[in-house]
Length: 135
Image (cartoon, rainbow, N blue to C red; front, side):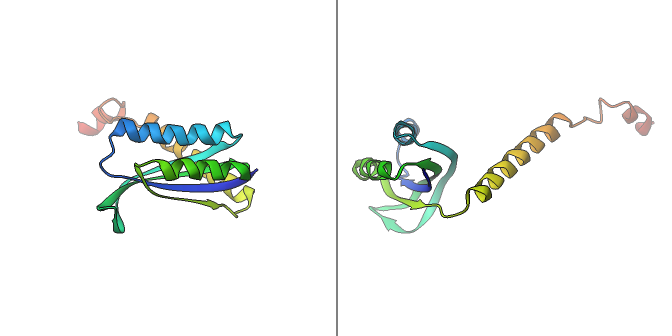
Protein backbone atom coordinates (compact mmCIF):
# COMPACT_ATOMS: atom_id res chain seq x y z
CA UNK A 1 0.00 0.00 0.00
CA UNK A 2 1.09 3.54 -0.71
CA UNK A 3 0.58 6.79 1.14
CA UNK A 4 -1.62 9.45 -0.38
CA UNK A 5 -2.77 12.92 0.56
CA UNK A 6 -6.24 14.12 -0.41
CA UNK A 7 -7.22 17.77 -0.27
CA UNK A 8 -10.87 18.65 -0.76
CA UNK A 9 -12.52 22.04 -1.06
CA UNK A 10 -16.24 22.05 -0.28
CA UNK A 11 -18.72 24.81 -1.10
CA UNK A 12 -18.94 27.37 1.71
CA UNK A 13 -22.76 27.22 1.81
CA UNK A 14 -22.92 23.46 2.50
CA UNK A 15 -24.79 22.55 5.68
CA UNK A 16 -22.62 21.11 8.42
CA UNK A 17 -24.46 17.78 8.50
CA UNK A 18 -24.09 17.44 4.72
CA UNK A 19 -20.35 18.21 4.86
CA UNK A 20 -19.92 15.62 7.63
CA UNK A 21 -21.77 13.08 5.47
CA UNK A 22 -19.44 13.78 2.54
CA UNK A 23 -16.35 13.42 4.73
CA UNK A 24 -17.68 10.21 6.31
CA UNK A 25 -18.45 8.78 2.86
CA UNK A 26 -14.90 9.58 1.76
CA UNK A 27 -13.42 7.92 4.84
CA UNK A 28 -15.70 4.90 4.36
CA UNK A 29 -14.66 4.67 0.71
CA UNK A 30 -10.99 4.61 1.72
CA UNK A 31 -11.42 2.03 4.47
CA UNK A 32 -13.69 -0.27 2.45
CA UNK A 33 -11.04 -0.47 -0.26
CA UNK A 34 -8.55 -1.75 2.31
CA UNK A 35 -6.96 1.57 3.21
CA UNK A 36 -6.37 3.26 6.53
CA UNK A 37 -6.68 6.92 7.51
CA UNK A 38 -3.45 8.18 9.09
CA UNK A 39 -4.44 11.78 9.62
CA UNK A 40 -7.55 13.92 9.15
CA UNK A 41 -6.95 17.67 9.21
CA UNK A 42 -9.87 20.08 8.90
CA UNK A 43 -8.52 23.45 7.76
CA UNK A 44 -11.93 25.05 7.93
CA UNK A 45 -13.25 27.94 5.87
CA UNK A 46 -10.60 29.83 3.91
CA UNK A 47 -10.43 32.37 1.13
CA UNK A 48 -9.44 30.85 -2.21
CA UNK A 49 -6.96 32.44 -4.60
CA UNK A 50 -9.62 32.78 -7.29
CA UNK A 51 -13.34 32.38 -7.67
CA UNK A 52 -14.66 28.89 -8.41
CA UNK A 53 -18.28 28.50 -9.51
CA UNK A 54 -19.19 31.85 -7.94
CA UNK A 55 -17.54 31.14 -4.58
CA UNK A 56 -14.59 33.06 -3.18
CA UNK A 57 -14.40 30.93 0.00
CA UNK A 58 -14.24 27.19 0.53
CA UNK A 59 -14.16 24.62 3.32
CA UNK A 60 -10.83 22.81 3.19
CA UNK A 61 -10.22 19.25 4.40
CA UNK A 62 -7.03 17.19 4.17
CA UNK A 63 -6.69 13.42 4.57
CA UNK A 64 -3.40 11.52 4.80
CA UNK A 65 -4.07 7.85 4.16
CA UNK A 66 -2.65 4.54 2.98
CA UNK A 67 -4.51 2.72 0.25
CA UNK A 68 -4.03 0.36 -2.67
CA UNK A 69 -3.48 2.21 -5.94
CA UNK A 70 -6.61 0.64 -7.43
CA UNK A 71 -8.84 2.45 -4.90
CA UNK A 72 -7.77 5.96 -5.92
CA UNK A 73 -9.77 5.92 -9.16
CA UNK A 74 -12.98 5.09 -7.29
CA UNK A 75 -12.38 7.79 -4.67
CA UNK A 76 -11.80 10.39 -7.38
CA UNK A 77 -14.88 9.24 -9.32
CA UNK A 78 -17.11 9.74 -6.28
CA UNK A 79 -15.61 13.16 -5.54
CA UNK A 80 -16.08 14.28 -9.16
CA UNK A 81 -19.81 13.56 -9.12
CA UNK A 82 -20.38 15.13 -5.70
CA UNK A 83 -21.84 18.59 -6.31
CA UNK A 84 -20.68 20.03 -2.99
CA UNK A 85 -17.00 19.38 -3.77
CA UNK A 86 -15.55 22.34 -5.66
CA UNK A 87 -12.06 20.86 -6.12
CA UNK A 88 -10.07 17.88 -4.96
CA UNK A 89 -6.56 16.61 -5.47
CA UNK A 90 -5.03 13.25 -4.59
CA UNK A 91 -1.23 13.07 -4.58
CA UNK A 92 1.09 10.26 -3.65
CA UNK A 93 3.15 11.05 -0.56
CA UNK A 94 6.79 10.35 -1.37
CA UNK A 95 8.14 10.97 2.11
CA UNK A 96 9.69 7.93 3.78
CA UNK A 97 7.38 6.09 6.17
CA UNK A 98 9.69 6.84 9.11
CA UNK A 99 9.41 10.62 8.54
CA UNK A 100 5.61 10.46 8.61
CA UNK A 101 5.61 8.15 11.65
CA UNK A 102 7.95 10.53 13.47
CA UNK A 103 5.71 13.47 12.60
CA UNK A 104 2.58 11.66 13.81
CA UNK A 105 4.33 10.58 17.03
CA UNK A 106 5.55 14.13 17.58
CA UNK A 107 2.03 15.51 17.22
CA UNK A 108 0.67 12.85 19.59
CA UNK A 109 3.37 13.70 22.14
CA UNK A 110 2.58 17.42 21.83
CA UNK A 111 -1.11 16.74 22.37
CA UNK A 112 -0.36 14.55 25.40
CA UNK A 113 1.95 17.22 26.85
CA UNK A 114 -0.74 19.88 26.37
CA UNK A 115 -3.31 17.66 28.09
CA UNK A 116 -0.91 16.96 30.96
CA UNK A 117 -0.15 20.65 31.33
CA UNK A 118 -3.85 21.42 31.49
CA UNK A 119 -4.34 18.74 34.17
CA UNK A 120 -1.35 19.85 36.23
CA UNK A 121 -2.39 23.52 36.36
CA UNK A 122 -2.55 24.65 39.97
CA UNK A 123 -4.85 27.48 40.83
CA UNK A 124 -3.03 29.82 43.21
CA UNK A 125 -6.17 30.20 45.27
CA UNK A 126 -6.06 26.47 46.04
CA UNK A 127 -2.35 26.12 46.82
CA UNK A 128 -0.89 26.11 50.32
CA UNK A 129 1.58 28.88 49.47
CA UNK A 130 -1.04 31.33 48.28
CA UNK A 131 -2.36 32.40 51.72
CA UNK A 132 1.20 32.98 52.96
CA UNK A 133 2.08 35.05 49.94
CA UNK A 134 -1.01 37.22 50.37
CA UNK A 135 -0.33 37.97 54.04
